Length: 256
View 1 (cartoon, rainbow, N blue to C red):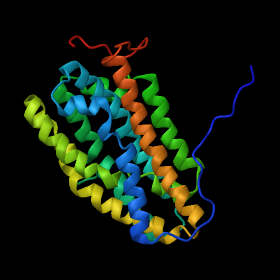
View 2 (tube, rainbow, N blue to C red):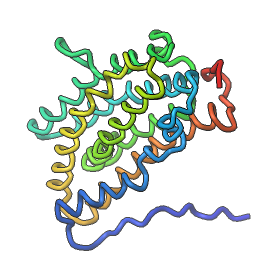
View 3 (cartoon, one colour):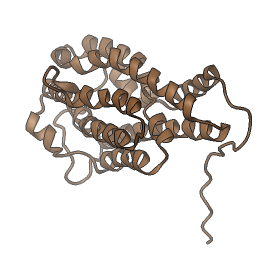
């Protein structure tokens, strides 16, 4: 039986340049369709239906994603030929790695994982992370390494949608999982960091996409990033919700 080629989304190669408002609307449309706020795992979280063990699995696996964000941003930083761009993008690395005045997002995420009952050393070591999590997150690094700088920057624009999700998440975590309240500093910091970062990235994409085809490549890069986030939750749902089949070596939960 002949293997059929995989169909991919058609990216328009011609057409008038989108205005800034049209470009932003196109990016926002990606979020409405594909952002992981609609994933069943997140819906369960926001309805108070996850067990402590399922939240532990989420915090552990999400840590791997959090840990590569400053690596991702360092790759983008190293590719930027403009010192103005590099100065602006450098802030992202500090936001996650911290510095002499701030503990950074990675450390804050470890605190959240500890609030679920996980051991900090286990979290940092990545013990029990799902193989699918590693594959999905590592693909994000491939995007920023191997595609154009424009696409690498555009892939970060899930920040356009994150503040709304974070606001809802903090409210629901406090409501349904009050024992997590001491570990929510990560989300509170992102409420002001993410909108600022998103505004810079949107303006960069608008200023540097010189053709409609380049604008569409930027929008596609954001779709691909959303797919990566969705795939991480798919893996969690399969392993820890339904059918509940964690692979060999993965974290095991004790409650359902």
